[in-house]
Image 1 (cartoon, rainbow, N blue to C red):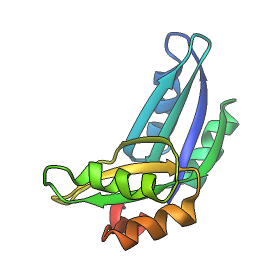
Image 2: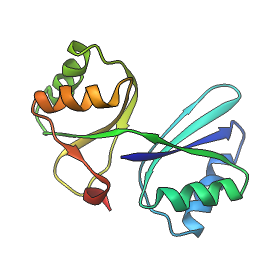
Image 3: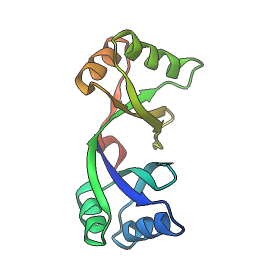
Length: 138
């Protein structure tokens, strides 16, 4: 799955400005995460049209790019997130970051940026986990 990643200056109103650009272009945000430092923030988005979103943000002066991520389906049972992360750890795969994914299903879901995408998919599949694709969400 493609994720839209946007660098933001850490100043008042910059996040609102980026989200306004997406709103004005009718780009739906499915899920998002914001991380910050003293100087800048990283906005990570799952949107219904990553190409259009990237183009719109870049046109308005934002630094935006794509990242490949994995959207993992998790059953709503105690320990399912732990089990997914454990399967990655046992395969020697580092998680660069993760965040919750909003879906229209009854399942829980997370977005993961692993150090080895193909290895992560194999490890998670071997542990019985399934994935969301863009088509499942939009």
